[in-house]
Amino acid sequence: MKRVAVIGAAGQLGSALVTVLEARGLEPIAFTRGTLDVCDHDQASAKLREAKPDAVVNTAAYLAVDLAEDEVAQAFEVNAVAAKHLAHVTKALDVPLVHVSTDYVFGREGARSTPYTELDAPGPQGVYGTSKLAGEYFVREYAPKHFVVRSAGLYETIGSRKKGGNFIETMLRLAAAGRALKVVSDQVLTPTYTPDLAAGIADLLTTDAYGLYHLTNAGSCSWYEFAAAIFALAGVDADLSPTTTAEYGAKAPRPAYSVLDNTKAIDAGVTPLRPWRDALEAYLQRRSA
Ligand SMILES: NC(=O)c1ccc[n+]([C@@H]2O[C@H](COP(=O)([O-])OP(=O)(O)OC[C@H]3O[C@@H](n4cnc5c(N)ncnc54)[C@H](OP(=O)(O)O)[C@@H]3O)[C@@H](O)[C@H]2O)c1
Image (cartoon, rainbow, N blue to C red; front, side, top):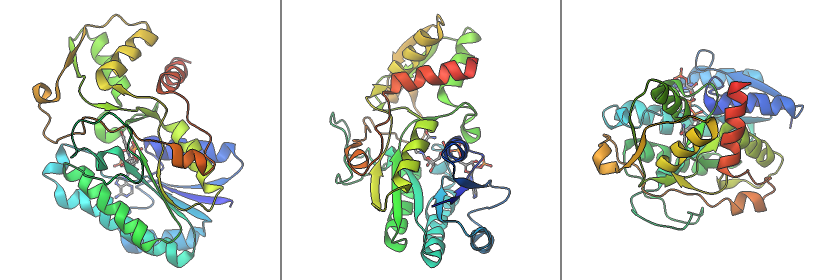
């Protein structure tokens, strides 16, 4: 395994993957949306065939969770139909496909307090989660050498452009502007630093233990607790208070609890990802370096 095609390489996870793969002496082939649009199936096939990768990682996605409620076709084109096409292409090339998915495939079950394993039945709530689950099923059905990797609450220093910057940057920006901040305390997950997730994906690629995996930093917190940790570690005195999902009133539903059990990935040879608070500290140090 040497040449790894990274699709969505300008994104939070894609950019971290390129860095991690390079650091491991591999040859990432970075495809941004400008050089490979996953919805342009002919172009995607031609680019991948030409690149002759030993593996493909698809990090491209339609991520606008609330907007997806109205842009159903667009969400499914990127998250499901394009994933199916990439599955066919990688099968034809006989190379592994890592397809990245989300904790939002869970949620319909409501409140819960034990992490989800890969054996738990998914139950997405909105269009985004449903489109991502459809993508998972296509990849699992059509790409024999697949790693479907579900993660959660991603952040990177470059931020997610579609989301208007990541959660940490949004919190710090609003606090600096003196805004009173209300953050939901009834959505529990594991925020995950993309360089850590990228390292886990690179570990998986050293194996042939194909399948479905959960991969996040360790531990869990609510978004409110995450915001409190950001301000504590950054030394910012913010006007922060908890709120509820109902009071916040976002358009799309979100899981009340979506913590993912990483045991299967660790058993397959992935070095356990560090606790979310340590990863947050590393992120804050890096952004101020
Ligand atoms: N962000 C999260 O909190 C989170 C949580 C759980 C799972 N995930 C999953 O993790 C993966 C990576 O997410 P991320 O946070 O790294 O997202 P991101 O920063 O938005 O990166 C996604 C990249 O995909 C590109 N893209 C969008 N449509 C494309 C298309 N048609 N063809 C090619 N590229 C396209 C985007 O380009 P443009 O910016 O030009 O649109 C962007 O560079 C996704 O599968 C996502 O579902 C994310």
